[in-house]
Length: 388
Ligand code: GLA
Image (cartoon, rainbow, N blue to C red):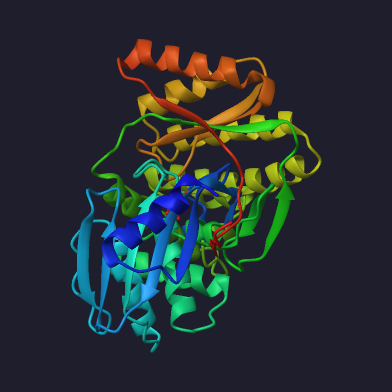
């Protein structure tokens, strides 16, 4: 049983002087490939990981939710589960957003008491927010007896983040936090939510390096990228009336009609169109254990995010280049939205010690600060966890 399970349970007992009814674990994720494709109805290849948000929770009589975040200096919020207050720009927006989304659907979540703890680094591109959303969504779904499916909980959480929190994210993070499976990556079609679970080959490690760069403007830049993609679709629709999203655009379409787009819009569209192809190629290569091909696609994906989509940062470029210099590392790229946060590399397990050392040394020499480097393991999606 992990430490965070106990931390959540003990935190709950200390605060509410009783036992929690439920302990829920909602995982973070790392995306191997498919950057900024999900809000273009495209393809992604994420993995749910062994870093997660944990919620210990019990229903209560009072008409409100009382929630405490153990990692935020025990910060506590109390709010009505019938009329959700406006967002305040902190961690509590995520659970509040879910109550808001349940109410939007005509569902009345029970009032409850809960504590939250998490080891998903915040703002690092590993979906700390989706982890919290899914943990609370799952808890309220069980305690209130709604019977929503995991896919429904993912969609509800995405709506909560889009409309209450105000980040126009796609479905990837919530879906993989809901439906991930240990030992696999999910090859996901974000339009239909159809997916294939692709086994991760034995002996390969997923190595994440956190640049520790956090960009305050990340969410407005993110929304701006999305707006550019929508602009590309609107312009291309004048010639290609059947397209609904960049997912429907082929490289040939772009060759033919790219001149309709302003340069920056064309580059954004080109990234998305090619990235969708890369994801499908990578999923097939992963399936047959062809890590050299997967690695090459990761590297190409990074160049495209850096040059065409412009969501990298010098710190991330250095981490990616340094990783690729180490023998036994297949490839690397930035993961998550970019602008800062983490890189991800696929490497032979035997190469991990050298990879770690090289990343730390190269990065520290260049930026005078240390990255946080860790190996992450694939894990299952959100679930209630029983004490051993
Ligand atoms: C964030 C969003 C996701 C996705 C990625 C970029 O993690 O939450 O929906 O768009 O960025 O691939």
